[in-house]
Each structure stands twice: as structure tokens, then as C-alpha cells.
Image (cartoon, rainbow, N blue to C red; front, side):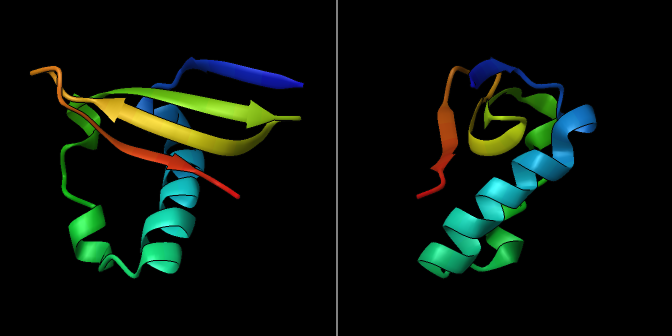
Length: 73
């Protein structure tokens, strides 16, 4: 079962960071210090889960900038 929902960063931080780490740090060799930019707590996040396992995420900053969109293979 797929679910997509607004994800409070502090509540879903581990799942959000897991997906982004797999996609950006491991998959695209982005340095972790660049991927973790300190803006997450100020952003609107969405999380997609499949059978309660995180599979995709994205965020929108207050200025409307959409980024950190990551989907597991």
C-alpha cells in the first residue's frame, strides 16, 4: 500500500534522511555536509511510504523552492 503525506520533519527525520542519504550521498556521491544543509526544520516535507517503508521524499522551502526530491530505486 502506498501512502503520501505531509511529514513533520522532527517526527519523520530518520525516514526522510534515510531516503536522501541513499539517493544523494550513496547514489550520487554528494558529500553529506552539503546534503544536510540545516534548512530542513524550516521546510514543508512530504514522504511516500510503501507498506510503512519510506521510498520517496521531497521538501519545499518557505520561498516556494522545491528540492531534495529523492526516490529509491
